[in-house]
Image 1 (cartoon, rainbow, N blue to C red):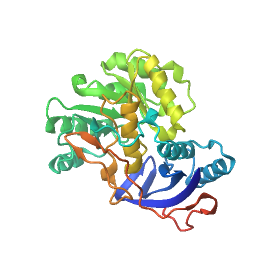
Image 2 (cartoon, rainbow, N blue to C red; image 1 turned 30 degrees about the vertical axis):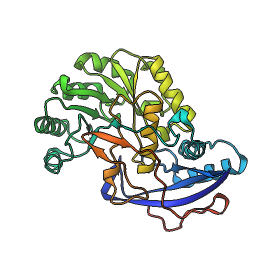
Image 3 (tube, rainbow, N blue to C red; image 1 turned 90 degrees about the vertical axis):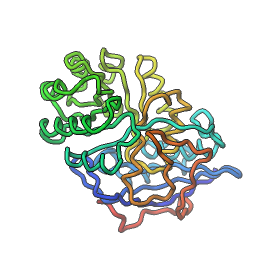
Image 4 (cartoon, helix red, strand yellow; image 1 turned 180 degrees about the vertical axis):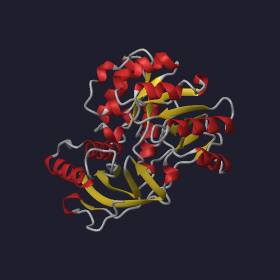
Length: 342
């Protein structure tokens, strides 16, 4: 196998916040794997403020693994290299055979903002056709979160359900006060609202809502406390945070053993990676859920054409997109000194 690398920058339409970090650009490295007449691609792009590793650390791990014919120690690098190899091999185990079966998968709309932003998003048609909407909560005052939630529920059809993502920011008491004032029948699940994941089952009991785990899957916490616990019924899996594709498959299987549904998502990755994960959803047997793959609209431009989305469904194209980037041999690749970081 031959490996080449290319640097990319994808500008956001407007500054994107990750915790206390605000980004103007999404930066990363694409891996191209060539085996015979076939090529495959994978994305190595740790998200600043989200992944633990930096892009420099990921690149160093990636290049070392390529030299040594091994698996990178850094997870985002392991993910990207694995994707490049398995797409070059057209591995049907992960849905990478060409052509892929035609079809589509459901995705949720993504919203991050306040009540006024929600009205503007609705007017712009950003919720049209979607059956589920993911809403960020826990970053400001609970009263503002509640106003935003009620605004969105009042704007969309009655059969639309919401997913509330708290990013482990709230205490049990704060989350209970907020969620007890939301119609539980309109909530698909509440994703990691609590600082202590061990309290998720108790929160589910108190508010009558399904809880989902996300950060707990890749943080160093005793995940066994919540796998299959009463009321904790969904796991949100971000592949680039887990590592090689075999590890992603293992986490999906483990969740299934514990009676948990899986929703696949990305860490604001490129439309190329979104296309891969859409195929994986079908191949891994979780294609019947709406997945968190609707973030391509955050970018002003990309190096591949985003998949078509209509009525909350993402088209699975028969062939994977080909990144339009300038590749150089992996051993010769260096990151640009003046790359955009924010």
